[in-house]
Image 1 (cartoon, rainbow, N blue to C red):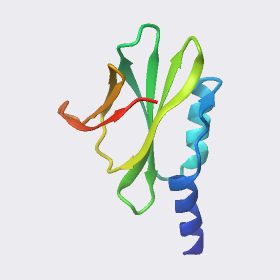
Image 2: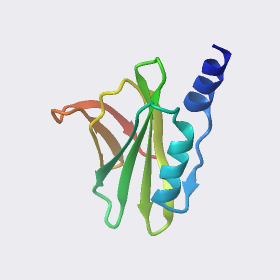
Image 3: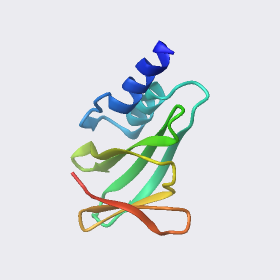
Image 4: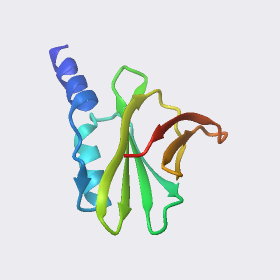
Length: 117
């Protein structure tokens, strides 16, 4: 049981880097956060900022019915973290519009909205 609490602390509370060298590096980081046989998700998102692409990552929290969610943006300045939080596993897409990240369910309804960093 002690190992479970250590795992939860690492996955849920470990600080995430502010920037990365590539989406591959972010994906590798996400793989290191996940527990064996537990869910990990990668979704492309949309951005209204010219030349910018975003990607959503979700790491399932074991026995919590929640995901650690983080979003990384790529533009001419590199790859940077623009949001992170913990939420129930309902997000199916993300869009960035006018500086706001909108997280949507499978029906396109907004679940939550955050300001982008």
